[in-house]
Length: 405
Ligand SMILES: Cc1ncc(COP(=O)(O)O)c(C=O)c1O
Image (cartoon, rainbow, N blue to C red; front, top):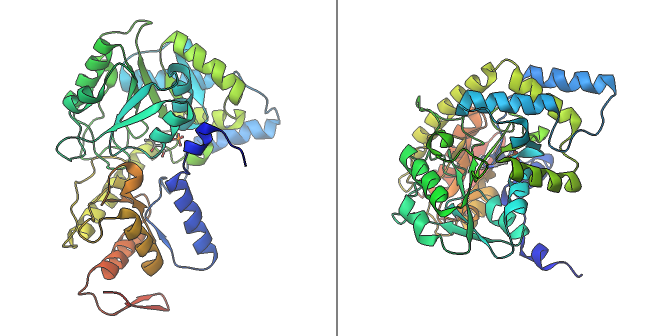
């Protein structure tokens, strides 16, 4: 079959694939524990459901402006003012089918073929593929000291004449690391000086622990004019447990948002009217669910850290936000893919190989499920990996016997 050059470069989404695998195994009756997930399990806010239901029962579900209904744009403007201390104009805001599509539209709008986009590794699985989709070249940069916290020097070293943009994601998927304020300030300043776009993917910015506050990139932006190349990305998926609603947004300069809107208008005509209304409900409604989610996740994180400490061979940097941890399991197997497959086959625990995020030897373990899932999942992993474990493990009525050493 003849497919395009670009399509041939694009791999499947490892994380979505694992969701599918877990669902298939569960449907077969296997007692799968999914520690690879990327979505909170709580219910979306009632205000979101009511807003969508109200539109649906009106039966007036029509096309919307391609950049979003005015009520959603107003809600995003208020959100930006509340969390970033400045008020964008409606022409500086575009709603999208998830943060994912907002990032895609931004890349479409700014990149010419072969131009490079720099982002720190470990990185979200989709960044390299998104850049390739628009004909660009992804340039992941691993911090020199091997940690999860990049330094400005790491970024500076790889930026060259082909570089068009930098992407930062903090708190970070997959590590849960919260980048230091000084680093973000330095990158904002560097991108302004070098006339580079900076895409700030803040999708987890309210899911941050230990009383810390998210860094506001605008605080360090000297250029607030139409020349500003700072693009802020956010959405309702993670903070409101609304992953399936597919609403995200971008905030940027007027010309850029106009171009992104043109692109979006031809690609999708904009996000679903129904789900835009749901997002308005979430953004304008009672906000307590975000705080409860954060508290639950922080507690889950603490339980997970405790559990992982019981492994001799695991090294973990405690996540400061998100619902992901990225422990180093290389003591057990240098190949994260092999290890992840082994854990799924032997004890039916789903984890995501670190290789997918640009760092071998690690596994991404999510803590967005229940405490029971986390503790049982990690217990099973420990049983599978620790040579001193008893020979048998019971999962419900099912007896597992170690046939490996
Ligand atoms: C870092 C990061 N950015 C963006 C997204 C996309 O979010 P959305 O569901 O709004 O498309 C995700 C989802 O996993 C993510 O982890």
